[in-house]
Image (cartoon, rainbow, N blue to C red; front, side, top):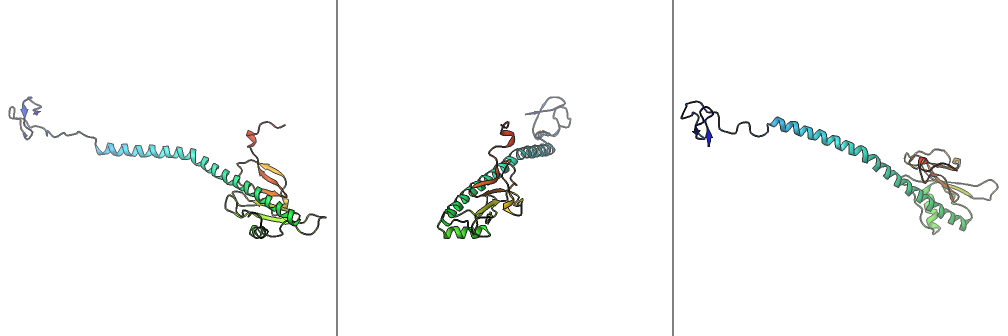
Length: 203
């Protein structure tokens, strides 16, 4: 039951005038109850801003870590492929006394398959073709007596025009743009097992 704000007499819900004092009654509807629309809009906008900020922080933390893990996996797969391909080439050389004298990784794969040896991987972890070169060392017999097999790394750009120009070198394992090169049964240029900062003091 509602009451007159002027005299306190009980009034009906439909009354507009107090029957006791004759004063006009304010609407008995629950005026002002509930939250105004503008408050909801401001609160909603605040939540959106906070949500975007949180997502931005999470993205800044997790995206670089995800990308690093992705490239690390591609680098490891590339190293494993090159090790396996090198072993297959050495097996070929045992049987033929020379390495296949071809100019591309696809031609190499064809020759290896024809020799009945395990197939060689043709694409590195970044889905780019491996590069194969072979040559005859001075003073040796005919045919290729040395070879190099390489990946250009993440950037797809080789550091030297000829694979014969690479010298033995380890590099920081997170430097994914560096070329990974194997040849004649061992790695020529390759990622170190640990980063320089993690390797500890030298001998």
